[in-house]
Amino acid sequence: MLNNGFRSFTVSLSLAFKDLWHDKKITFCLVVSLASVIAPLLLLFGLKFGIIETMEQRLLQDPGKREIKIVGHYKLDSMWFEQLRSRADVSFVIPNTRALNTQVDLIKDARNFLRKVEIIPTKFGDPLVSDGLAFPASINEIIVSHTLALKLALKMGDQLNMIIPRVFQGQSEPGKFLVKVVGILPESAFYRAGIFADFALLKAVDDFKDQFSVPEFGISHGKQRTDRKIFASARVFAKSLPDVATLADFIRLSGVEVKTHAKDIENIQQTEKVLSFIVKVLAWVAILGGAVSLAGFLIANVDRKRQHLAMLRLMGFTGFSVALYPVIQSLLIATFGFLLALTAYLFGAQAFDQELGSFMQQSGFICRLSHQQLLTAYLFTHLIVFATAIIGGIRAIQIEPAETFRQH
Image 1: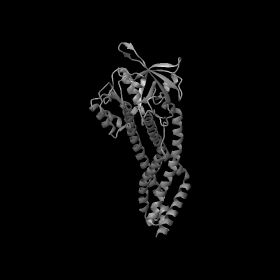
Image 2 (image 1 turned 135 degrees about the vertical axis):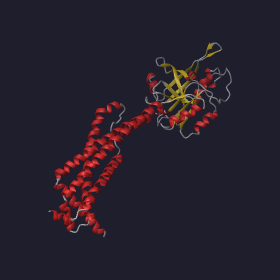
Image 3 (image 1 turned 90 degrees about the horizontal axis):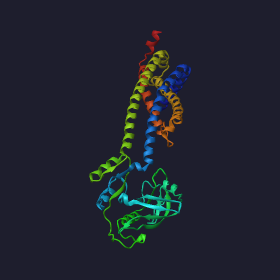
Image 4 (image 1 turned 90 degrees about the vertical axis):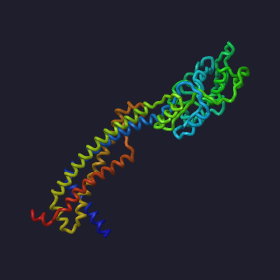
C-alpha cells in the first residue's frame, strides 16, 4: 500500500511538472505574478525589521541609554542601595557624591592640564566600561574618557597629578595625588572629559573638600571622618531597555527624582507598532488577493483539463492521485515564485542599503531579514498555496470520466 502511494505521488509529480513545462508561458506568468506579490512583502518586512533592529541595536550598544540619572542630592542609606541591588531589573548600582565635589584638576605636564574634570565612581560590571579594559585595582588607578585622553595626549601607563582645590580656615589648601592611567574608554561610551575611578578615591576627594583630614592626600589636619553610610547620589543602570521605565518609577516612589532616556525608547516602540500595523494591513491585502487569484487559476485550469484528468481516472488513477495533480502544480509554482521573489528581495535590499544606509549613520542596515524569517516566509507561502490548491484538488476529484466524455 505504501509503495503504491509513493508510486502515485511520483507519477503525479512527474505529470504535473511536465504539464507545467508544456504550458511554460502560462507557468511563467503565474510564477511572475506570485513573485510580484511576495517580493514587495519581503522588502516591506525587511524594512520593518531592518530599521527597528538597527535602532534597537544602537540603544543596546549605548549603555548610557539604560542609565537612570538621579536629579539633585539626597540622603541615600545602605537600605536604599540594598533594595536596588536585590531587584532583577538592576544591572549596576554604585554610590556617588555631590556633583560639586566630583570635580578635580589634572596636570600631565606644563603644557597639558585641564581644570574641573569629573570623577565617576566605577567598579567591576560598570556598563560604560568596555570589555577588555582593566578596572581600577587601587585608589591611584584611573580609566580616562576618550575626550580627556585626546585633550591631555594621554596613553596607557601615563601618570597624572590630581589637584583637589579647597579652602581651609580661610586659606587656599589644594590637595595633590598621583594617579596612573590603566584604561581609555571609547568615545561612544562617555563623550565628556572625565575619569572613572575606584569609589575610595571619590570618597577621599569628597572628604577633603568637606574639610576632613585625608591621609591619602597627606592631609592630617581637619575633621575626622567616621565610616560613611549616607550618600548624596548614585549611578544606576537598568538591565534592559524595557526595564528602564519600571525601575525609574520604583526609584521615584522612594522619593528620589530621576531622568531617563525613556522618550528615545518610547519612540522606538511606537515606531515598531506603527510599522507593524502598516505591514500587517498590506500583507493581508496582498495575501488575500494572491490567494483568490491563485484559486481562480486552479479552478480554471482544472476545468480546462477536465478531459485529461478524466483520462487519468480511466487509466486507473485514484481520486487522491488526481487531486494531487493540481496541488503539486501549485506547490511547484509557489517554490519557483518564492525563489524569484527572493532574488528580487536580495537586489532590492542591497539597493535600499546602498542608497539609504548613510542615513543610519553607524553601519546600520535599512532592509534585512534573517534566515529564520525567510524560512518562515517560505513555509507560510506554501501553506497559503496548499490551502488554496485544495480547492482545485476537490474539483478534480469531482470529475466524472463518463460524463466528461459524453460531453465530447
